[in-house]
Image (cartoon, rainbow over all chains, first blue to last red):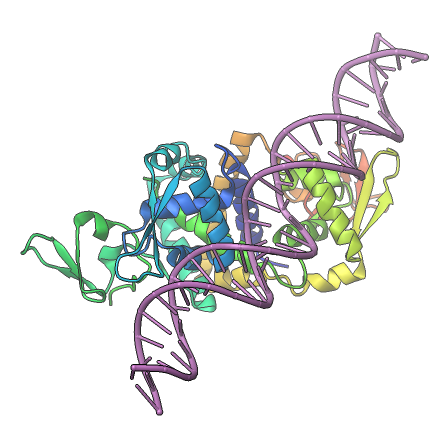
Length: 184
Length: 184
DNA sequence: CCCAGTTGTATCGAGTCGATACTATAATAG
DNA sequence: CTATTATAGTATCGACTCGATACAACTGGG
């Protein structure tokens, strides 16, 4: 009925997902932790995580509570908006990420020929774009690939975001961002 | 830290997974239903499903109970081994599968160029093989690609399984099997 | 007959997840 | 400058997931 790729992808996803019951964390908690490690400072909020994971706010709120209980993340009031919450990994969270069960999948991908890895990544990007379009979701690409990204080698900060009117450190621009929109 | 393909694959999987909360079924229940539609008669058992999904027996048992409650599958005593249970879709189960939310992913895959689809499938197979090897899991390939598959155009049944010593209908051999091992 | 191994079920506890209802704060319109 | 509306996040409920553990039923070999 469906192309065998759908079934393969689905089963592969399940196996990876079910491997993620290690280190006292659940799969979803691992994903939240991973996201917080990769997201720049504008995107480390419950709302952005919600949109990244494609779940509801309530569920994400609970997941974050679990991670906080375990001492892996910290919450802070966001600067500027008193409704907002800013999330950060603790050093324990950082440390735990070195035992990320996703490493197994990564090893399998790296076992493919270099040429295939590149093609595989490109196809996944295409697929993702298509899926995101269907659900009108955000891409969460790297900050520096965004159409609001501006080079600016003067005045201390190396770069600049024209959407948020904020200076960007090298770190900021290497990480992923909730507001990212691919440059033309 | 990890290749971006790992992250993409993980997020793609999550989005697909979270789309599968339709039709009154949960993602896992959809996968069980899908499996039962694709598995040949030797493989439609709780045990085989357990190994396919990579979960524990207890969890699968509950999932099957939920599907039975909803009238989508039927249980029968297995012939031969009185411990065994044979699972079959009801007509309601068959009907529900025509609304499988996986169709969305399939549509996205089919939107790729034909050439890419082929390559993508091949890479996924390689990845899966690697992952299965790490966890010593079963492949669940099509019966007719198995090393125990024998052509036999005489005596009614078109084919034959040399492992189970059972005749195989055309249907049997097109479906996937828990015992399948790729032919040399 | 006994016993190790297999197939499946029952139960528990932590967590997932959507749905819904809620609080607090911000932004905007009149 | 308030009234409305929108946004960020939390609380609670119920159905389900999932591993862990314990268990019952059955098979098959000594």
